[in-house]
Image 1: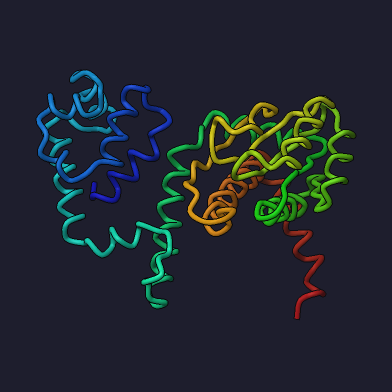
Image 2 (image 1 turned 90 degrees about the vertical axis):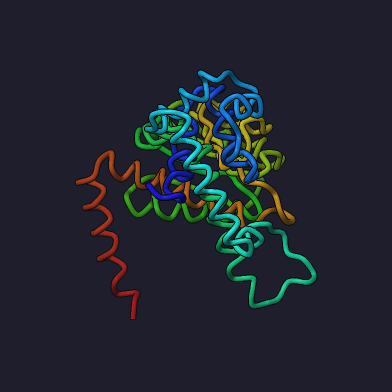
Length: 287
């Protein structure tokens, strides 16, 4: 397993680790090159855990002990020293001294990091619950404003192609009206990076009060919108710029793609048939 693959495995399995083992993972993912020289005692002190916890983490990652874990960390930070310019590329935001030619790499590398953080943050259990809820729903209403509206519209379009009854109203008043008409047979989904957009939060609250199953896609498990969500899917993005439009949308779209494909897989044969029929039906609209 290479260095990048090892870091990817840590992020992928992060949610399945015990809280104490997550502290060990955090030290590796967020630490500096000095940790590669730590003894197990020093590493445990840095992570504020016991030495057996460090060993359990190593075992959970498929390693025999701390010696193998330390070798991995040496490889990680040796690579960091060799590619100082790449590390700098990850340290967004844009600065006045940046050159235009550097921006494509900065944007791509930052998005890659956010995608890895999304993978680390999302709960497999919550994801499966969301897929089942969407599959069983009679109607699905999506609530979002501003930057998140792009994600909402994309999700509604995808789900419509496989025959699901999905609505997304761009008008905030209509979102609230729609939310109030939902029943226990329906699902409401609110998308808000900050989790504080009043229009989206209030719409999801109205839907929950009406009896609908509610899903929130947001940045943090402590976001306000989660108070009204039965299921929470977190992107765990850092906010770099106003509205975080550039980076939050990348993670949000990935999550709705996961949901769409999950619903598709739940009834693969029937959904594939509907998708093909709808695709054939729009061919006359394509040159």
